[in-house]
Amino acid sequence: MTISKITKRVATGALLAASLALSAGTAMAAEGYGDCPLTGQKGTASITPAVPGQFTVIINLPAVGQFNGDTPETIKDGFEFCMAVNIAHRLGLDKVKLVNASFDSIVAGQNKDFDIALALISVTEPRKKVVDFSVPYATSDYGIAAKAGSTLNEETIKTSHMGTQAGTTMIPFLQETLKVEKVDVFDDTGSMFTAAAAGKVDAVMTDLGIVLGQVANSNGKLVTLGKYSTGGQTAGIYQKGSPNNPIIDKVMEELKADGTLKQLEKAYLLESFGGVSPDDIPAWKH
Image (spheres, rainbow, N blue to C red):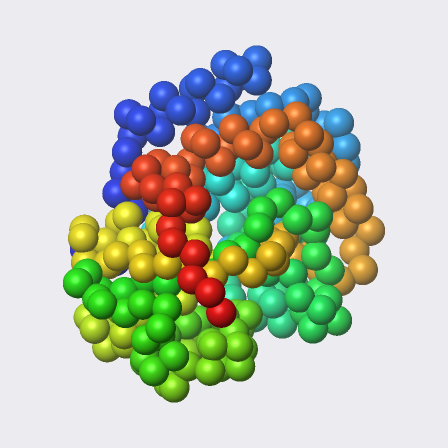
């Protein structure tokens, strides 16, 4: 079993999703929507999708709590997935197609023929030059995970051997803000956390939500040590200049305003975090 393997909590997840569906006064999702509950009315907005007949979403796996599954084909729920499903529902599109891609290709604007990319992406000015961002839907704190038993702390991190993922804002944060002595950059999330569990690096840093999900599913091999509050925002990425972007933005704003995103957060994130709230993680100074 790999670090990124999803532990299915079928009974609990089904109850949470059913509760959300009932509270929204809707039925469970139809074909192409996994097990996500739906809110709002179908087809209240419309776009010309990148691929006819479907809402195409670029993702970066593993993403415990966001896209629960080992491959795009096995994903049935998760916060970002069910957010995408509800966007598609309100756009009148019956199918959500997931396409896995590397994180650095996503933020570099290298992917084509998609409607939105969702991968807990931090909004930055350099990225705005090559991609368009959606309206923000979360804040972006950085989390630190290490092998169980680690004594690393906010004082010793500067002299440590850290790992992070290619294309992320954590690279300049570690190198320029914290001035960490040694930083390894990994191509994907899975290999980064595998290295941490094996003790090949002292710790790894990525989005706090990803850290909490990976730690919860590591069978005790990993622990969350702390977090850095950055004040940043998390948003989706669009193809630059697409006329669909403001339409999808409006739908996302409606999902925030009517409480759908807050309910999805309660249903999928805290469960995937092993019941640990991001608020409970010690904040480190930088």
